[in-house]
Length: 98
Ligand SMILES: [Zn+2]
Image 1 (cartoon, rainbow, N blue to C red):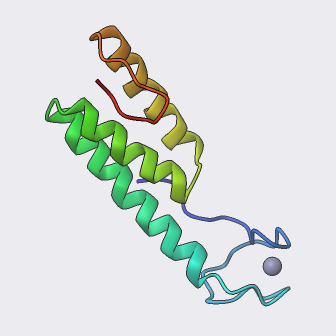
Image 2 (cartoon, rainbow, N blue to C red):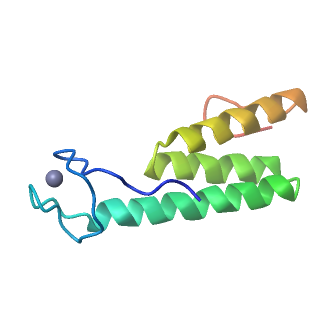
Image 3 (cartoon, helix red, strand yellow):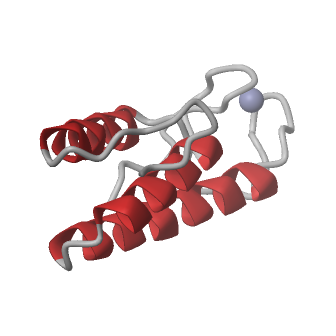
């Protein structure tokens, strides 16, 4: 599980679990939804990686990065790309792995 949001993305005030930022009123609803979607895709990537489906794992980790470009997602993506490269699977420019 990734680390949850710690600060308001708008004003950097400490996130205390409220629906809106206590300082600037920023609505955290969509940020929380993106975090949840990123976590789901990260977990699916791990599941596919454990099952040996590296191509689907790469797809899910790319989705995870799209929703939250967290360092943990980026590191997992780099690992899967390296593993695919080692196994002779090339990633084309359009993102498809062959
Ligand atoms: Zn704020």
